[in-house]
Image (tube, rainbow over all chains, first blue to last red; front, side, top):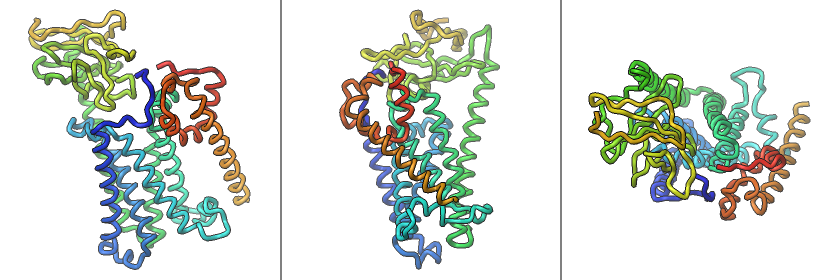
Length: 351
Length: 73
């Protein structure tokens, strides 16, 4: 919204979310340092500093899996939407944990020679001649750079001034960082222990889970799109029975080749708006009507359902679509109304 | 050869970061409101928290200043 930027938009949910994440990080690192010597015998003779480096790295890698899983989980089930709301905070904390891992590792392994520690990562780590000898530290540095850029631009200022398209492209590079980190973990484990073993199993299991979730979410979205294509009648989209749309919630439909439409039920009537929030392109249809306004589940931006306009003093608007009810089923016209001529809500009970 | 290339790279990255820090100071203290009206009444902390991104992406914002681009919401 065209309002003054804040450093962090705190609310009770964000504070609780962040507190849980901080507790989780502490528990993970502490638990790792306590349990690793029991699970992996070679870790029993490892110094506390090296164990801390390993614990922080494992924690950051685990957090990255959680971050990557949240998106598809939220698309598969609304129960996971609360995890999505503050994913930005989780991402920034992930970077800080990864930075701590890298900083301690650089000091421990490269900080006590005459060579610049940063240069030492690239000069003394491996031979670059083959996959087995490839310096895993370089892969880690590459991934850390991507995570830094993502954390540094995790603010509405950057979304607005980089443009949503460039910002989105930058943040999709998390998958490039993920690929680099898989190499970092596997090559690092092979170098340190000679046998990646347990690390390889854990890493590949994590990858399988993330890939499986992305595929499942993609298949679900594809099926929903297929169903919408079949439902087009007289140029209008068949949304389904009006009474099956939960009160204050929406059903999302996909017009062929067009932007998704969210059809909300509220106060005994229906209104349809673009599913794309003007803020960070969040899925409006996964939100709910609160205090008479459609509320985006990602960051709480609001729009009046009958006009698509944000409540004063905000100026943002989403387009609206006309709905009608035939034989108890809701249909929506996929041609968007202009902002000056918004669609009129349809009272449930009209035939 | 490799060491020379790496030495040069680190040197230029350092220069880039120093220039970015200078830009960040200007932006946080004076320039923010000229680029984005969202900073018209923002707090110093709200501008300062952008510093890492300002140091990393200062050429892009400098170009936006130069062409007079302004985010209008």
